[in-house]
Structures are given as C-alpha cells and as structure tokens.
Image (tube, rainbow, N blue to C red):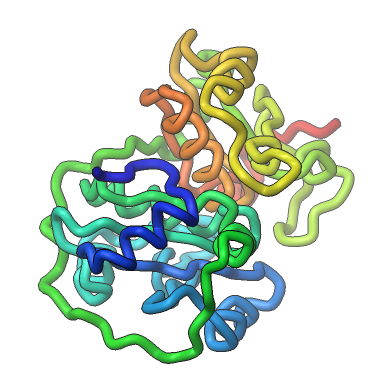
Length: 279
C-alpha cells in the first residue's frame, strides 16, 4: 500500500516492523528559534528519522523580494531527496511536533518533484508516543542515492504578478492565524495585513481537538464552503509553509486542483506597489 496524504502512527509502526523501504523525516521547527527543531530531534526522534531543516533543506536562497521561505531550485531539492535516500517507490513519512505544517511543506516539495509515495504522520510526535512508539537519539546513517529523477512539476504554483492580475477571479485562502490575517499583529513580516480578496482558513482548523486531521468528508464540506470545487483555489500564508497544510487537507479531502503561491505574504508585502487589505 502506498500512502499519499496521511498515515497513522500504527501504520508507520507496521512499516518499520516489516522493514519496508522507508524514509522518515523529522521536520519539527520554530520560526522564532530556528535551531529548536533540530535540538528536539537530537533529544528524541522516531527510530531512523533524519532531520529536515526548513531553512537549509526545505527552502531556497532569499533575495529580499522572494519571501522568507522561497522554494528551493528543483535541482537542489532533487539532490536533497537523493541524499536522504529517497527514490521512486520508497515510502516517505514526514512529521513534526507542531501540528503538521512543516511536515506538509516536505510533503508538498516531494510531490512537486513527482514523488507520490509521501505522507504526513497524522498527529505527529504526540500520536506516535500515544500509540506506544519509542523515540531514539541515535544519528541514523543516510542511504545516499543519486538526485531524485524529477519529473514535470506535479504541484502547480502561481507567481505574484500572475496572482495580482487575477485577484477577484479565483479563490484565495490564507492559512495564517486570524490576528495576522486581519493586520492586528505582524511578528514576522514588515507589513501587516493580507492580500485583497483573500479568505481566512487558519491551518489549525484542519485539525480536531486531539491534533489529528479531521475526517476527509468533514474537510471536503469545509473547503466546499470556502469555494473549493467551484473554480481555481490558490493557497498562501506568511511564507508558503503553512499553506501546504491546507493543500494537504484539500488533497486528503479529494480535491486536486489547488495551487500554491510560494512567496505568500512575505513576498507580496515586499513590493509597496502591491495592494494591502486589513480587517
């Protein structure tokens, strides 16, 4: 069985028990303390899990105008995937301890390369521990492979200028917290507010009270109420990371037409000529 969206802790344990071809990626991260995730990984991670750092491994170089977490070049991401031992047919399970946004970024990037055998551990580290899974402090050896044979990008994106030209013609969902969306606070970017016409869909609204993703049928209803299925849906957030959580939720719910605006608010607001909305 190939897991393409979510995988449970029990299913992950089964894969480990039968020594199936598997790469585990710990993507835990903190936007304020960027070393916190790696420290947590060193203190205890799923057995054999490699650490995937948002800045080093899951983002490209910043120019000052392309957002805080621009996409890596496809060639660079293909090399990183190969370094992690990922090849066609190898199941990848990504997880974090923050509700899944950083794991979803890894999921999106690998899907973008054309690798479909990638899933996010539903519930993350907490679910693993609750299911009786143990944590390890050993540094695993990487099964180095050649760069991943990237195909045509499997996950569509939109650039800032194209988005600007189409505002009002598509459904734009913003994954940030409500206070940031409304422009009441802005802890990370120089300008507060949101892209005109965007609708708030805080990524944590994809989760139930126990930290697991809501059932696919419920997510499908919620996204339908936001405009999914009635035309093109574009996802954005602060820097193109938590938007991947909403993309994952939509794919899990059976929608496949969603697009990522990678630069998101951090890129959008870097150009003062672009319009800004508040409240």
